[in-house]
Image (cartoon, rainbow over all chains, first blue to last red; front, side, top):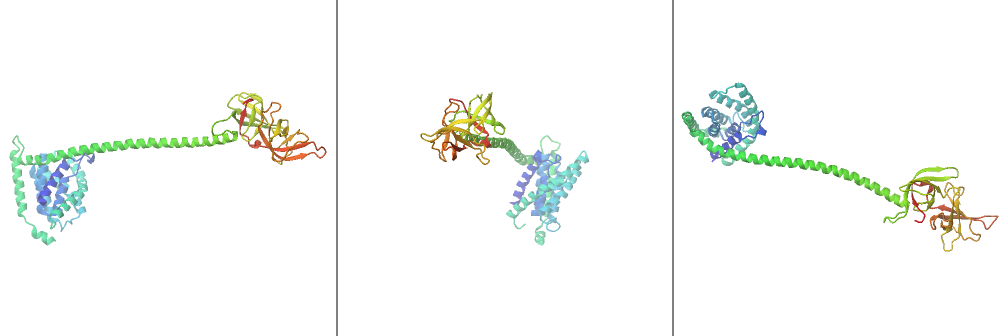
Length: 158
Length: 280
């Protein structure tokens, strides 16, 4: 049940990221909602759920964008597993920690995806990542709170 | 808590998901050369695109509602500002009207015009004083042509008459002028007749008149009211002049009676007066 809920929320997260309103763009960039969602899933439900979130998120986002799925799978599933493994030990289950993880994870995910599909010019890519990282951290707070509430509601033992 | 989570953690699901990811990647790679979209892309599109379309439609509706709300708000703000300005103007007009009302009311009281608007004569304003040792005259300006001989009064009593007229301006000789006289009588049934003159030495700093040329057996008492008699045709009859404050009989001639009269009109504070034509 939890995984079904996470899948539905990931579909909504992908749709939100793809339809981010123009008047909310910063320097033409919107937040990485899917990255924030995967961090929220992993931090609230653990590495297996994080890995599943990465799998679904990469499949949906990569499929809609027409990107090469291999790089997306590696980046997002690794993010979910690593954050899930470190939760409760290195990473406290706090909203602020989720925001900090997203700040760090956004450029790392983009870096991994870039290794599999290099952008034509690195400078716009760098600028985009520098804008996206803090912006994604801002939206990570409500996203993490939402995933944590869903997890506590459906599987309190997590 | 940590030990519980570590004990529950299993790698098998993760490895299974990695295998699924590899399979999906291979499927995408195999379909990359074909004309149709790969299986993963078809799945993602079928799942995400309807939600995406719904969000775009919802966003459009929300955007239109927001735009309409803000445009309405801007219109309301502008209307509110306009109404505030009009209220301020109305308040200023109201204040001015109130001032005019009080001025008008005070002027009508001075002129003796009642609130119903039933009045005779025309209003005039005292614009100059030309008083010498014995001469007491004022210049008035009315809102119509003045004529020599017009009667001037206030609400309380007779003031004088116009002796010079030039257009809407005229010189008025007052009752307290030393060379002025008014045929008068005691306001009583069978009241005695006399002549009212100025009495500059009678009052202690107060403008006084004296009624003399009375009959030898005149019955004049303190408190009697004195009005114009109309004799001689200079003034119309029954215009209030003043009230008798004292009566003196000459010690050498008992028939000589003088009654000192305090005029009704306040000659020290003349500002608005009423001008009456003969016959009005």
